[in-house]
Length: 327
Image (cartoon, rainbow, N blue to C red; front, side, top):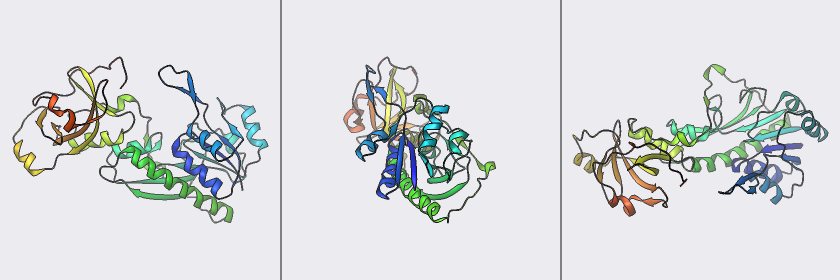
């Protein structure tokens, strides 16, 4: 089976590797253009998929700035693909390309559709406190993640799992789902299940503002935000007029600690107890234990390393501004 693969970030790499390992004829790899990185923005960095394609010995690597052009459609048409596979490519394919492969275009999406259509489904599943998620393969149409479902694979979201850890689990699951999906297409045993559009939810891309902590929310909601924005954009608050990143937290359930602070009517965001292993902060409902944090222009540290520099009774989140320098 002749395949064109389209993907960009690390999530898509196991899918490309699975195509090669299972001896599919990869006619081309399509990925986003190299992008400058670093403070000077002068060094172009190739996408993870391009690096993987080079490592796997694939020579036909396409990086178009635009895909909605007659020229690009003609390039794809000349390759005569049986199927086009996309995984986190980052662009919606136009009908002109969707109609080219004889078996259609298949997408590997990191949610259980129709839930979490769109960008960043992994992060939002954690932020919203879901206990399960998975991957879906489906036939693409002109909508955003609206096509008929072929196959789903589910997995649990562990209570303290962060977005990177779930990302790493789902990218492997996605490759497994793709392999099974292509086998059913080759054998003619695939099924098409229309999505229930009335149950669809959409999620947006992460921005750095997504990580701003609202201390009026419950300790569980804040803990989920910390997990879901790790490693990017990172959850943050403000302390003594400067940004403070929060990398790891726990919902405080220690009976001894809760007993010691019972009756505390501190406003949300107040550092109510400084312990050796963490900083206990009042939330809108419950208490949050911060165990790893990062001050401006400093490295990530455990609360045990730096908590002694903070005073009980101080309130986080009051002076909200962006520093000039990124951490």
